Image (cartoon, rainbow, N blue to C red; front, side, top):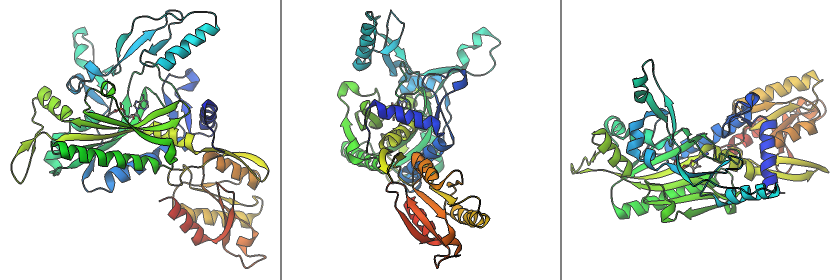
Length: 455
Ligand code: GAP
């Protein structure tokens, strides 16, 4: 059974904590709103999603370079990019309880008014004020008061600017020909007024992005925009997300970020409604032109055939890593009945799953079974490092534990594997998570089955 609604969100938040995927940040000190820590299973899941992005958008392509820029950047970068001026949300405060909300989120506002109504009170709002989302910090020694201003820097509000300020470095070191892309993955920080919905709106989160630079030409812009829109949509689906749970939606003109000539979102049908998972933006020459103006350094690309100079346009694919983790978990959650027992499992795509397979001896007090199981475990570890070992409790319980974290395969070593009573020597049972069905395979066949599934 596929589950929907806020109950589903509660189940995922609880499973994520209980099974070591995601914890509230600094929890023993009461937590920090909009900040989360990843546990052993979460960090693997997140790593697999990032790796899948890196492979498809960067490593497998001859026209894209990878890079990794610093998080801290001087204020001037954000003045040039337009973020100090325009990267802001309208904030209102409830005078009764001092709760702060985004004035442009009517559902949150009316939910808050309803909450006060239930308490026989009336919410009263301040006038909206514009609240900048950039997170500031101070760098360097500050003995003298007058130096404080000089050391104010920003934690990047989008990872994009790290690429834009290195555009010339990439031109000079790699000598690429248009069209070409620069991709990266990394943390971004936003002082969100109302962080909420678990990983959905955080203050510290990770982005995976591609800036694809093209000739400044309308027809080329349209062609490339369509190509990357579809590429990103196909990639999102390849996380294993059900096709009818994803859609593309164009931004209305007044909804677009200050840098965008055109913008589309990939949206996911979440328990909170259709929500943005990914953005595709036509940034034109906004960033390069502004950095050229503010830094005084030419950002022009020279055509090696004609010698002509131009400021390329940028088609951007920008996705939230944590939102991909959240939507993948929500989409994968299932409850059903197996062998007359209710169970919950995560139908994660094997390439994304934190653990690829679990190996287990049927009984843990039979040394020969345990020894053989260790041998199989070591052999499968050569296929992938994320092969778990579990000999705790009975075999049914071990299967349930693995189902709950989305392990696609369980391999059991029994007396037939030892060949003591049958010709099935050196074969194992391979159990499939979604159906609970088991098949008998040789050890190399089981290894190959896993290898193919996780590609
Ligand atoms: N460089 C373009 C850019 O940053 P964006 O639409 O503001 O565009 C891109 O962000 C993606 O980053 C979003 O589609 C979303 O997946 C993710 N994202 C943005 N704000 C977020 C937040 N507060 N918490 C988690 N993810 C967020």
